[in-house]
Length: 273
Ligand SMILES: [Zn+2]
Ligand SMILES: [Zn+2]
Image 1: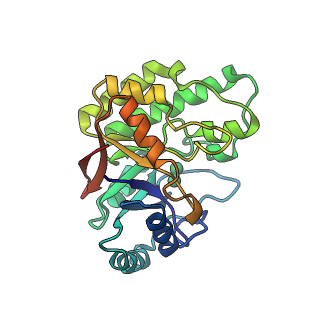
Image 2: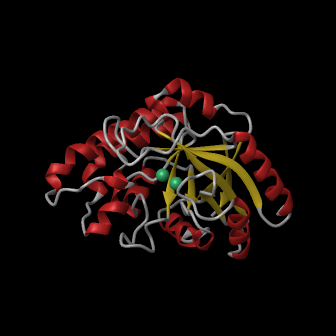
């Protein structure tokens, strides 16, 4: 059976990652994964006016490819390694987004929204106690996912509801199903264009204690006819690579999915889950 982590970061290519690509691969093999996709941050388009210092545009493809190829060969026969990217908000700067998406050596691109056009990464946000004050922000965030789904600049929509991970740290949260209308629109647009969604397991073992998006949202996507799902740990350290993937597959089965996807040349490969 396939056990594939399709969202991993590695040092030095992702500035917030701790472990090297080699260490991530070793961790993945030790945890019994069959596949791992390397998806480092590419924040070239995110237009984040951050006071905290945005990640610099990623240009180090040659070094990454050399490193990746060496590790890929070392693990061939044990772990199927593929090269992808987590491309933040490619539709904010569509020309640059298109350039990155089209790089011929990338098999897979996660489209993620970490910040709205005029604000900081949700990681740094001060969340109001009163959710009604935050509701318009979530609405704008979901509008951006709708545009992203229609853009043709990513293969899957990454971690929809990302801010829940950070709200949980200060004891706040909300039910994504309050936004069922916008979610239906996003999923219908994605399904029509062959764009998938990601089930992100990074919140499972932290304060959030849940998947991103939640089970109910995954079920909605399935009910609307969605079939393309990747599962990723969003790990930045060797210790976390592959965490929650088995639980993610269990959730997919419970929600009626028959397949999980791998990617080659931006095309999904369906594997029984
Ligand atoms: Zn992300
Ligand atoms: Zn990530």
